[in-house]
Image (tube, rainbow over all chains, first blue to last red):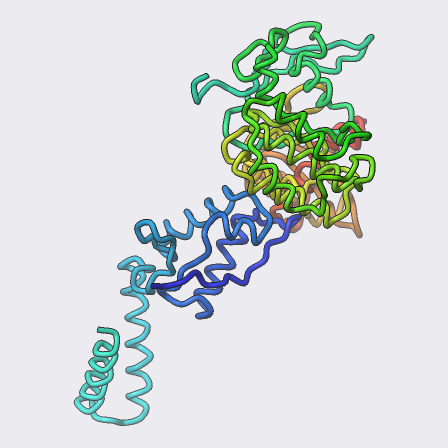
Length: 135
Length: 303
């Protein structure tokens, strides 16, 4: 079973961002940097409130926003977990990112002068290997 | 009392001291289950309001209700449901802490020793110590622990951290915020210290000269105030013509404005008055509240 992971963030009063927004920004940044990985459990509302010396309702508000945006996901009775990236993007956003990734790949391969059939076979192998690992 | 009865309600509450209105037609509603922070300059009427709410003072006009009961008809049982922590942390100085606890336990039917023990755990206070031997911070801790252990429905804290050092202040806020009592009661928290208010408040109430000026969650209030800087080669608009103006300053040839309730149309207003460029940004809660309260004190009278 996953345990709560420490959340190394701090908030400041007197900032032009509300404290709940500071928490949202900090967690999104940590997920983006890979410091918080998918499947990690974040602290409880009360726990993070105590860590930061703030009203628990402020943490609850930040967690609600992160959940609505798909960064965090509740598991029944267990707490909140960092979601896998695929759940975080809308279908339009996924489409855009996929197009971008293919574009990058094609550009590199073309520059190498490798035949398309060879490149496709290698790509197929690589993708199968990843899905075997995560299956 | 149903869940929706306001914990505090006042209607047209006024109190006149000589020719000065300490409270001026104050209409206030405080919903149950939240931490309400009251801010206001000195003399805004906070202490007067509490004295009326607790039945120690009669208003000149208007009415007030606490926990659904008229404030001039509170019974001893009603009073048992109200906790009050003041800045002086007035406790009988000759008593030992254990004697104070024994006395409170007798007076309050809902006394919960476990809550007292948990809260006092934030402090190094011994049962055999006399109140007079405690530091100001420790006295604040005992006062808070006693009030939370009584399990009030309404807890009023009037500048409770005034004069406490940073360590004692932090211990006080933590003891308050994470107590089970706080989760189930309504807290009215008066303070001039905006960093505390930012940490604790669900709702912000701004009083000025005895009247209610604003009430909303703190972040909503902060969003009403914005800071603009305009590059204006000339004198700029007459302050009295500037919509929502809270503060104006001219620094190094740039015009700085703190304004209330202005959207992007304010940029247009500045441009119409000769601004070559404009920029704006949000402000901290501290800046927003101070600007709001300073209005009328620093504004030049329209020439």
